Length: 172
Image (cartoon, rainbow, N blue to C red; front, side, top):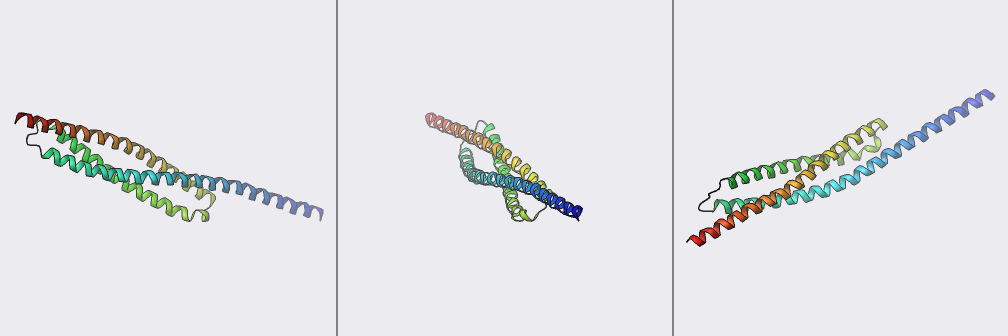
């Protein structure tokens, strides 16, 4: 009888110990998920900013293109090559932003059933989400830098147009 009581106590201690370990793991995973949610909020904010900026650059690009094509004599064809390169970057950014939007939406869907997953499935999901977040944040940083570069290139073309227009006026 005494050995049975010891055995029951031992089982109770083991189950309490396992439950405690599981709670720690669950809490840690919940904290990781919370961190990813914060990252996701930051990613969404940057995504919206970059989308608006890309749309602004697209409009600006169309205006610069029209101005350049409106010049009567275009002596430097490198400006047209610049425009083509800029347009390709803007389109590429649009495609990246669309893929980021899809990833963001899929992350939101994944998070809805997170509590129902096993510990291993939670770890795997969090790891995959972190990899995706890292990729998106890296691409966002790159896009922001490229947006700044595009603005400088547009300004360079505008300056050339203004110089060319003022040169035409002084000749006539």
